Image 1 (tube, helix red, strand yellow):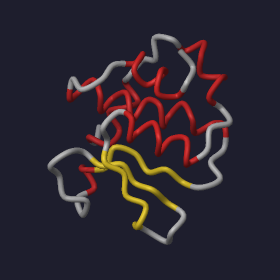
Image 2: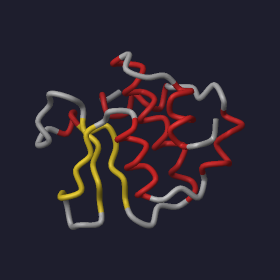
Image 3: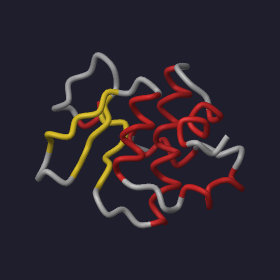
Image 4: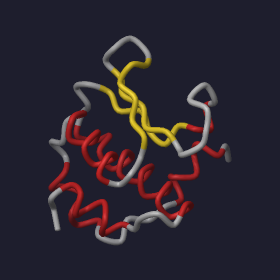
Length: 107
């Protein structure tokens, strides 16, 4: 398994709340990342992507990416975005699942 696929092993403890975030937009996720202290750049790619990066890591390296946030994201991708952010928080011990739910305004 590649390091960028580790999020697939992360379990969402409050999975019943996922339906409440299915309509979140790119701007909502950018705000969540910023509240959690994750660095977000919107000047990457073709202008419709925002990329969240790990601390002290070069944005040029793929393994430095926490999550890519696209414009016009569909409901099905919300769970993966949540899990990628959660995986980063658990690995760095910077935040936990409930912190993400609070940043999303669900808790």
